[in-house]
Image 1 (spheres, rainbow, N blue to C red):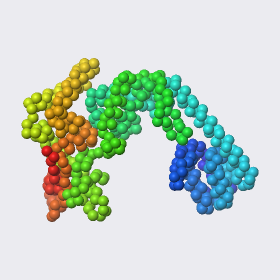
Image 2 (tube, rainbow, N blue to C red):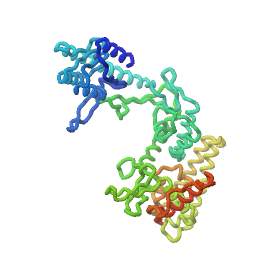
Image 3 (cartoon, rainbow, N blue to C red):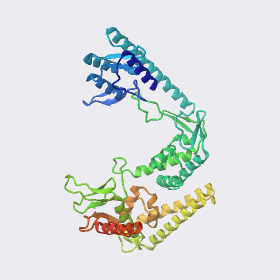
Length: 486
């Protein structure tokens, strides 16, 4: 593009024209069409070229007297775009030139020739697109990698994928942990804490890990999804073949991991409306003045009173969550939590025994994982023992549900809520909080109490921070009221 602009500027200088503005369309196709909906509601096919449209707008309002393009097919490849250029020229009367001489619209002969050349250029693009599409399909049928960025766990070499040992090991460990009950978040958190580099040099996110573990390439499978006529990528896979590269995961393990991830994702869908963004205490924090739910906006819980300007109450999101979480964990650690949740005065001795066994099994599961990750227990023994322990936990949870019908079907291990909290999803945290907490009422800022403190003379920074923290704690204690459900 730099060379094209240089040649266009040279032509302008030779003609004695002053350059008013340069329009660049880098990585923008002048051929591919997309389906769009017009303001009238009509769905049409159009080539989307914002810079070209801006150019026509400038020429149409006579912001320039001429247009220079490098070549005709660099200016237009779609007959409709050419007709729009011709119409704008007729109305505004500007000149059209190209460095190659292929684009002139001075008379009927020039216009007729331009239409023929654009039709030929459009046909050439269609032929190229068809050949590329067929070559991509053949490449997939042969099990060859399509090129581009290699998935995590591999590197590109001689147009194929070569496993990176340290990355492949991380992928296998992640798959094992997901099957063992760990969440995507826990794996991502551990990778970030360990400084595992991502392909783009940013912190790992659960979305990236999900894409890795559900990418068929890691089990040696090559899939092909064609480009549709509207330019979008097909959602349906039309070809699946064995790749010529070494797989990182067994096919069976890959499919199991995919089913687990899909099942967890389905469990977090709310009200059949798709995935809903939740926070640990979503829907529970209410304005003490209006009584309606407060929502997270930036770093605050904000009152969402429908009539604007009627209520401006807000409170720190992080500090409020800290207060709620501390009280919630204290409540879960209190004696008799099982009786409290069951709503009964007493719980059967059998249920208490099962709860103790669940606690013991959870601890045993943690020790087993540690032994496996430390190399004390081999993978086969680890999976076998873990399956037996998990089976006992599932049966125990079913017994607890029967004894405590008010518990949700997720069947929490009550003694492990505090230990599991950080590694669980917001949906799980929200459900666990609602077992004990009915709502959190946010009151107004205490009258006569400032929001901050000034540093005193001869007071150290540390002393000032301690005094400020004490003030904030006093304020939060008066502003945040917890209403317990049980």
